[in-house]
Length: 152
Picture 1 (cartoon, rainbow, N blue to C red):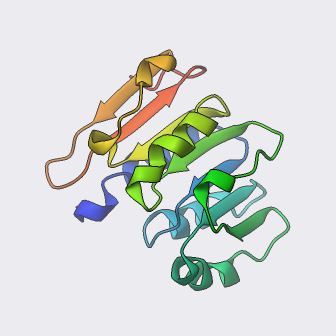
Picture 2 (tube, rainbow, N blue to C red):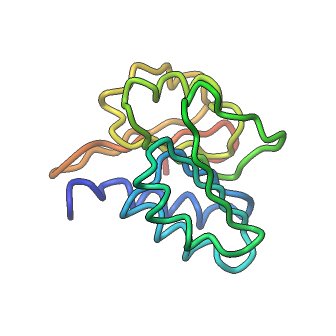
């Protein structure tokens, strides 16, 4: 498996375990296309990035009223859209902002997925269920939830 795609099995699993809206915080060549496909039949997908290049690459593919992409200048300005998400995927840049974003969204999703989790200084025990999944070839991925047992 490509070391940049080690999160995909866990992200797909989280989306399939749930039925509501998905928030992607950090667009990419692996997560964005698969999320667009998984959500194309009526699930809301909101993808956010602070990098113009990533946003411009994928924004044209967000063509329905359920799927939206946003360009955000600064992650500290991430809006609270006023509802809970089934899945929140965190793989944003710069990496030092991931803790700030996780502090803001950790209780807003049924399942939180964080790529490159070994580099995060975040207290995952805030969530009832949390499991870090290692990879032989690349970064680890954390799945965490207060609602669903992601350790099985």
